[in-house]
Length: 99
Length: 99
DNA sequence: CCTCAATATTAGCTTTAACTAATATAACTT
DNA sequence: AAGTTATATTAGTTAAAGCTAATATTGAGG
Figure 1 (cartoon, rainbow over the protein chains, first blue to last red):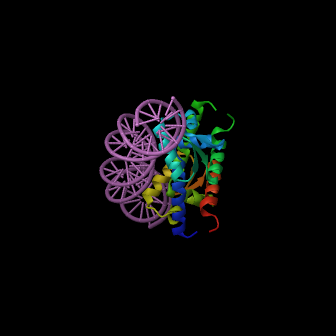
Figure 2 (figure 1 turned 90 degrees about the vertical axis):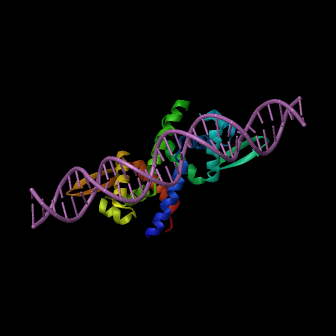
Figure 3 (figure 1 turned 180 degrees about the horizontal axis):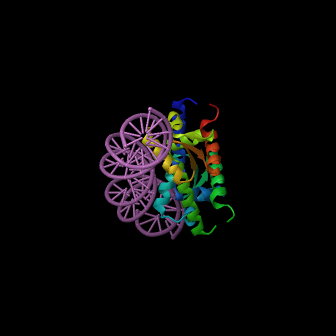
């Protein structure tokens, strides 16, 4: 591969991985692997304060890893990137299998 | 999964991903996908200075993502973690396919 | 032994990520 | 309209990652 392209591909991949490299975001994504969840439901699963969760959700939205739908005051999050599903399944196998 | 375990699994996964989340390290690992490489050979492939490359190699060694073998003054690096091969192949598909 | 080539390490600086605390917005409920 | 629940945002601080520049180590060859 030509060097300029190799560099820019690795920068994209770096960015992608960094957006994933956080325990709170991983727990959120893992929870969403099972299906749609409201913020309150996520707060039950993930041991963080509400503002911190909200900040991580904002990042996941900006990365377009997740999408949302509103129903009244409740906002439901779901996975929106097939690459995330693939990576999360791999990571699940590495770190969470046989539990 | 029990909450304490979920947290510790996500911390492990976070750590694992962070060690991967760097363009230089990704280029190194990508190069090593094709086989063993000396530091000098890696320097030809990866656009960084020698000390920077060496720092990233140290991190990859500590993570045990790579292993080394010495031959005279030359040190050869190779992939040493099957999880890395799997993730790199996935990332290659996401970011480098059809080039 | 002295020098050169290959590789590694350390210190200092800058940038980026993540947390806390406080506050804001938006939509139901009475 | 006022209160309450659900969610988001912002400012400020701290900690971690990455770079540059300088220097150290290790092995080979004369």
